[in-house]
Image 1 (cartoon, rainbow, N blue to C red):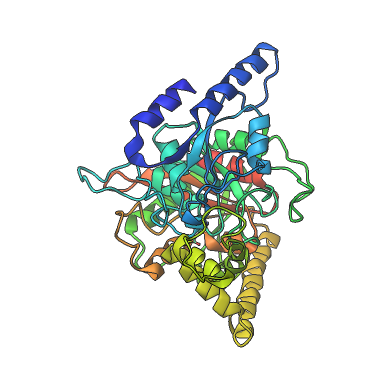
Image 2: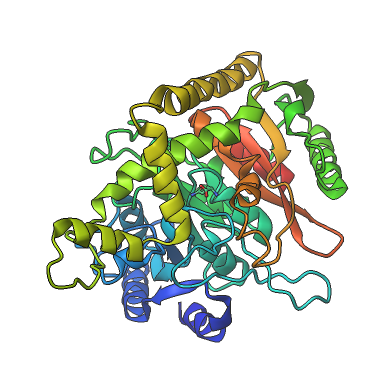
Length: 455
Ligand code: GLN
């Protein structure tokens, strides 16, 4: 814990840790020592971790990367961060992220962006760590903590993990409680571990998962001992290679990495099958209707009354002016864009044309996956991202270009499936690239074991 706290002080320029909690960390580290001395050894006892700013942590600033939650100190702990605490994990601080988890580069954060600890060749240019869990990815990759929590609505665990050379697991929707995690799009949001290795993801993932009566979508299913399932034996497993993920303009290096990953799984005894997920091309547009729709509803609660920031008012301003000024000043441009898009697609005249249609497309995407799993596919191998880490400042002015970063990850959220990003190589500039494995619902153990064979 002391070494991590020192590393955080030394790495200020990375912008990964936005609220430091050294007193809490040292107190928990001492408590962990006492538990170990008493012969108790919960699975994360004394392990220093960072917590994404989206998780409510009792008495500790939890701003979701937004000005509108300035000064908000939650009186409660999210279920997931509470489970980590109970398992002995030591919270070092809160980690940077895109505002309300909307973004793929960490650049929509009110704190300013986090920086990727990797550099391209000899270049000085600062690169994005990805987003929205960019601070988590940067912190783990730069050894500021041993692991971090992330959340993934459309790729926010897997994409930053891939761009920083770490492992990121998005569990099946319903595996981790959403209680106390600031909501973005409730039917898609899912927490998960961001770690250096697949084994760490197995250990931390098991702690983060589990039934919680406080979240009605949380699954009442036992959480297996994932670590014990890491045998590396994948003989007889059938891995699907979906042809729709072969995109025009995708860098050759990613194609190569993908084939090499497939070969590696075959060498380990798996069988490869070409598969088709025909509705893949509609995933991104459907996601960018559904996610903003849910966000516009979830974010309605930030009104200047209940949490955080309230805009200064002028004489004569009433409650409407307070709402308007608070929301105009408190939300950044990407969040305002999503609220406007979401409100529009839910409005009476357009609901059927956009929101309902997107929901139908979502059902078709889910069915594509069900069909391949029914046909005997155990896991699906795809690239995690369409490119390596890009320069900060390059895509932020073009929302559509930014949205394309999620092209390989959003399908998994729409279908509610588990997905994992595994670092598998470097591009010719020396930047990390990752592959994604997609698994059957609730079979994170199998998925982790396949990822273990790929690592
Ligand atoms: N980049 C996607 C978005 O901006 C996904 C974000 C996420 O998974 N939280 O919506």
